[in-house]
Each structure stands twice: as structure tokens, then as C-alpha cells.
Image (cartoon, rainbow, N blue to C red):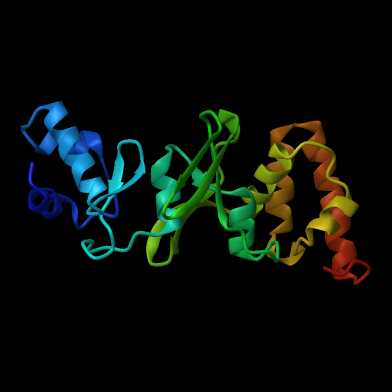
Amino acid sequence: MKFDELLDRFNDEACFDYPSVALLFPESDAAIRTSLYRFKKTGRLLELRRGLYAFPERYRKVTLTGPAVANALYQPSYLSTLWALSFYGVIPEKTVVYTSVTPRQTKRFENSLGSFFYRSLQTSLFTGFGTESIMGTPVRIATPEKALLDLMYLEEGEWTEGRMDSMRFEPGAIALEPFLAAMADTAIPRLMRAADAWKRYAFETQEGRIEV
């Protein structure tokens, strides 16, 4: 397998995996892996994780972004919790780690595009996401309300008004009724208590008794 042949097949894709390469080239498994290793060592190929590749920018026809890589690295998954809340302006801090949720086991990845953290979510809660165009690329991401629910579910302890205040949440970025309904649908007592605390927190923030 020659590099120009690989480039011709995949340079219009943000990233591609080993099975796709093996399907298109007739060489043996060992020969393909040797070629991919050689291309990586010479800087003509990026390995995002084992078996998932992308071309450096000088070769690609499409943009490779951190959010899109977050979706591709570990599937099924969608961006949520702190990264999504930062994206929507629910929290003021910019989050450098791409945080996602998945029904699979917890994982972490590091590559040239950044740090990627996947937290395990029970299958019944793996919902409440859609597609947003981020940096010109369609990306699976939780709604603001689901990103907040995911965070409250995954982080241990009670979510009191004081804890919410310490996070400097912007309640105006959360649609109250859909959020409360989603929290109630979980039937998880801790989340239902958190929903009651959020109602008080949102009201008090709106009335100016808590500054965020």
C-alpha cells in the first residue's frame, strides 16, 4: 500500500479506521499495519487512538476538530457534562477536556487534538442529545438541559443551592420546564431533590439574591 493510494481514498474524510483501510486494500493484515506504522513514524499519518487515523492538516481536504474527534474516538457517545455546559454558556469557564458520556465503560484518550474523557452512563439515560454544527462540523452533543442532568447524575453528593452557586451556573441558559421534566423522568430521588434545589436556585438568581 502506497501513501498516495491511501491519501486518494481517505483525504476527504476527517478520520478513518483500520477496518475501512483493510476493506479497500488487498494486502495482508501484516503488510497494511506495517505501512500504517511507517506513515505514522514519518509524520504523514496521525493515530488518534489504536486503529483510528487522520491525515495531518497539509494533506486533508476537510477540517479535523476536537469535538468531531470526541464523537469518533469512542462510540456510541455524545459530548456532555462540563464541555457541553461550557459550550452553551451554562458555566463561565472554558473546558479544555472534551467530556462525553457513553453506555460503555469509562475511558480516557490523549492525542494531538487534546484530552478526551468518556464517563459511563446507564443505557436508559443515554438520550437527550442532538446534532450541532461546531467549528463547521456536525457533532453529537447533549442539549443544555441534558448536559446538566448528566453532570448531576455522574457527580456524587447532593446538589444543593450552595453547590450550584459555587459552580456559577447560569440558570437562564437552561429551559426550566424541560429540565425539571427530564429530572422527574429519571425517578432517581437524588436527582429529584436536585431539581427542587434548581428551582429555588434559578428563582433566587433571577431575583438577584445570588450573583453568578
